[in-house]
Image (cartoon, rainbow, N blue to C red; front, side, top):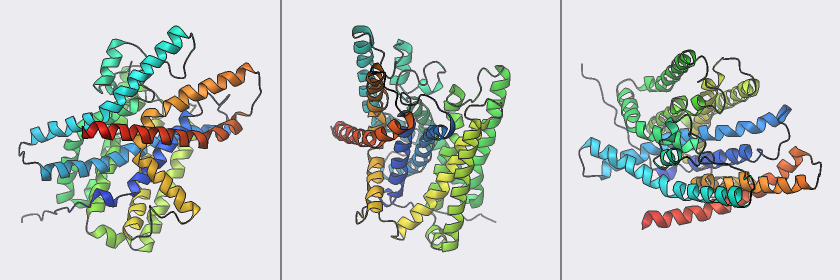
Length: 403
């Protein structure tokens, strides 16, 4: 008997303003963690919770997985090119050209700042970049995500782009696998991210044992940054595309019990990921905790996103409504999401260079400050400054894209 093929009717990306909110939360989380580099005298107690802001990258990976589905399917639909390999090359080229101009401009500015501050002014900047020609070239072509030496040494927070671009290269193949599984065994598509998690754990175990734990997924290590460690969360974003594109999604999630249960799972996985993070952030137990933590937090965002999208589609989550303080904050966070790439590119000038300069001057006065209080005082102004910088960066990049 011939199996029934399920045809997916994609929803318009413009209807998923919830994804902008998630990206806004993600970039603010990244600012939260990067702001503390020169402000915190120690990282004891609850101060460790600030470091959890690094999980903002997991939100970006998951949202990217979903957003790329719309870009890829739209490209396939609009293009007259029938050769799938040519379609793939066009997709990768477009991804590169979308990211590269801003990345290369900021990379050049960082290089110039490093030369001026270190070589001329004899002043150590907030971010000391590697000036290796090999490292710079790897970053220029977004291949640094495969380099242990240069994955995060040339561009502030640059590991994210290096890892993301490799995931973009893999995306069309992963999308095809998920689509094939969904059309034939709908429920099994949910198992693919878990299968990738198992693969990543086995892969890390083999690499760790072969290198006597020299290459081990400690927090902020090469193996932690490596694309295999973020592939399961990225795949969750692809799976989410198939779920929200299903005609049954809106019917299922209009049920209050389903929303409450999904919200419960979001809270449960979120709290568990935080607890696991705080337990393992400063302890090397060789328990591969930082293989599991990114995925568990991705599950939290996955469940939260499903609820948010269902609320948005039922008009219960109004993104552009600024009638009260809560809605005004949501609107601002959503706008941060729209400007998130520009904010990511420029945030180092505040979080690294700016705060380092201010703290250096404060220390010259021998002033004994409360680091947590100073951190809190700096946080909101820095978010707004980075938001403005990101806005102008996006305007500039849009002009480049249109030219």
